[in-house]
Image (cartoon, rainbow, N blue to C red; front, side, top):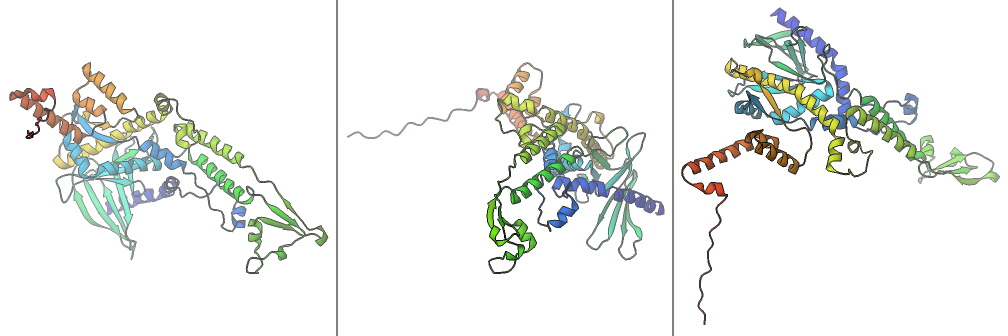
Length: 455
């Protein structure tokens, strides 16, 4: 349809306009940013000998937060839904969800697309990059009204997938004409667009999110500049320099007798100054002290820690041993709270993904679906002994169930299922009259050694 082709072209143009911004955040996360605060004239004069020292604090900030975002299951009306967890495992979302969280934190947002699976009854759930997917929202309901995915193949053919509430349209723009044509349509009549954005730090008037790197990038650029300057200073000034007065540039040769280039003379350990032969003498400069670079880097690290909520030892500017485990937890307070905020925001997106998965699988939603809840692993770092002590006390007081105690201890849903199966077997044995299961494992039978003849 012409209308679908025009709509796909509009969404594609919006997606392409966002590419420079998304590419910038991706480069910073990967440590491929250019060297800032360096004069272009100086870079040209150094003839490419400057290798920038990348202090990749952006990746540290993102990864430190993402490492505390682990989904462990889903609940409906306080009941763990094994079927939803089966959907999760079948689509490899243990690994893919980490990629979605990293992209959302670094590149402002990522996406999840839900659809039918051609080879299985389990819905197909894939995570997508904001560099390939764009979703448009209704300003009143904030819900996605249309979305597009764009990618190209090795032959420079452009493929577009247009997602609408009632259908999914597949289009291609071939290289030999640049005319977009529709080649397939899937009428699903779900009533909703099967694309879910995972947005980092969205605001009321900005649903596209904010990169977690926005506050860190200027400080990281400054740190890269200082670290690069430190290496240049180490090359030229940290080692003592000798000056020979009375020799010129034409008097310097390499081991093969060839005159040294101007750059080789500058980079060498001996400098020369023309003078009368009678005034030839050798002098030596004092080596440079690099402490000012160290202090500047430590100051920048403190600023990054303040902006990102990272503990001092994460950034390496504090080498003092923590006084206690409580001191470690106190230093991580802001990081834990930031992780819990992301769990709440990202959890809503994963709940919408699971609602779509049920809709694709059953064409309807079960009762109580509005109470769907994402189960997250504890974002803090308590010790095993502390977690066990807290769980036992809460369980003994009757405040939590046995299953909740096991979840608090960090067991996976599969491990809890095995434990519950063992509990059921133990109850069945008791009901059958075998009370030994209440006393622990049976002791191994003792066998006496065989008697031997005594001469």
